[in-house]
Image (tube, rainbow, N blue to C red; front, side, top):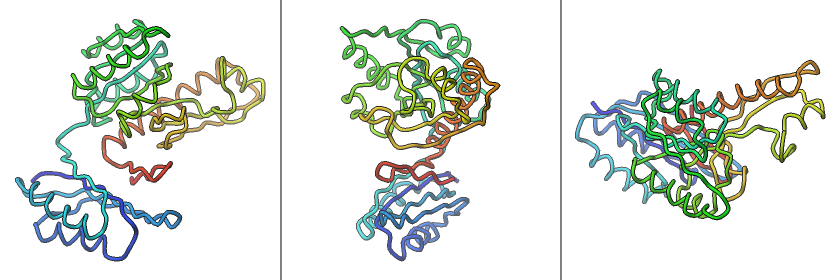
Length: 281
């Protein structure tokens, strides 16, 4: 048997689930997990179905779902779960998210293959290579930004990366790069944005006496830090936390939110709903 995941979205109407289930039942497939959501605001329906199918059935399934797409206006994808998501990580000088992702991958907790790490600094090379993963130092400045991004795209092509993860990569990606990898770049940032922009946001938060520390994982779009949100994590703090302690709490929240977002993407649980996401878990 082969394990597949079917994801789809379409205008909401009666009969969608019955039609999908009928295709699977007629071909001796067994549904092992299924989630769905109808958005009354947009009138869109979203479905994720994981199922076991007899080997060699992909072409037949593709033909059947293509026919359903005509009838229901489906935007659909069929994934073979034996094909793991290949991830390129971009990082700068802060290694906590990188270290967390590499550890989770080695421990079998992410369901992805980290194929390479690239950085505008050399600092994370020893950490990366300790996991046996290729490291690429790609310095960037005002005079070579376009060339450096071309090197990033070349790495995506060379390694066959399905997903690019910005694990505290402190560079703004160009609109052109974002447009070339739609829905394939995940970023993490502290949830103070846009409240505390610029240098030392945790110091700014401390001065304002914040009571919650958080982090947001989202898809990257040309609109800075405004892409569809995948996951957020928060922790309560109080007046006893200084700026350094707030930063430590924030780092933990960033690791948790980013790891969940990467895992859900790899499990094909995230569907785009206009400027939002539907996470079927």
